Length: 379
Ligand SMILES: *Cc1c(COP(=O)(O)O)cnc(C)c1O
Image (cartoon, rainbow, N blue to C red; front, side, top):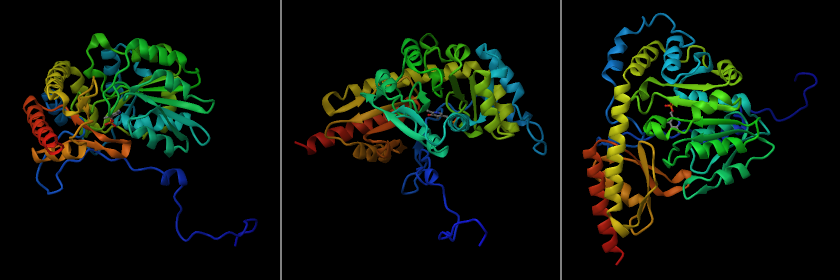
């Protein structure tokens, strides 16, 4: 025994930190049925149009794999700066925006601190909070949407970071520019607001939430974006963050040294040049989402309710005879996988990614038939 060490029962194996043991590992959207039959995956908010052809072609232009990539993603940050009219020095790229969300919590919160987000927020926020030893805190929602006053009322002297996805996942709900400004104005200046804009490109430009402008002038706002959704590059794992130099400096200390690989840098650079693909994706999503919502609304009093969405998915609530579990089974039978999130307190809902027009018509038809069957059974 070493001197000066009090005698305690020494564990016979490495002991996981309690804050790490409390994490429920992130559960990704499933991609196959229980029976092994192939299903169309509408459970991970991927782009049904695929990827820009220009981005795909750029894979071949990546530097040789034997050399390390640019550690600072310089060309990518320069192009992002041009596209969004912002200073590239205030941009940091990440291995998906997930890396940046995680290290943002670690940089600004720790044991004894609180990390705040809304009920029905993105599950990564809780993981990010626990990972750095901070306490995750949920603010009450307002009928699945963000309740700004409730969120502000939940801020305590221990709050260090507030996460807000706008549009939010898994609800699709959205705060306007005025509402976001009011939320920011109500936060103490030492609380970091992480504005997760993973779905921002799906919102019509005239309805932009002003997050990037906010991050330009405020010292306590970090905006994050991703190439995983509208750009159709989920597999390349690239996201970026923008904020005050001190915030970006903190993230640069914590991120992986070569966190964006050579192929990912080449492909995302090319993707940024194809804004026509981004616009086509947005227009497709807006039209197909509206048609799908109309079809579900037309089911009348079947007890289905669609939470208003600005994203590339909708949260459908099952408040009548047809349960979410039975609806999920009917959708599965029709050949699709969607997202049931009972672990997030949403046993009554399904999150359905907007696919092609044909796919959404098939899902609506399956739900129509299932609602009909459930109504007969309950009579
Ligand atoms: C999909 C998603 C992201 C993106 O994560 P990546 O790590 O960039 O793939 C971030 N936030 C939310 C809310 C999301 O739904």
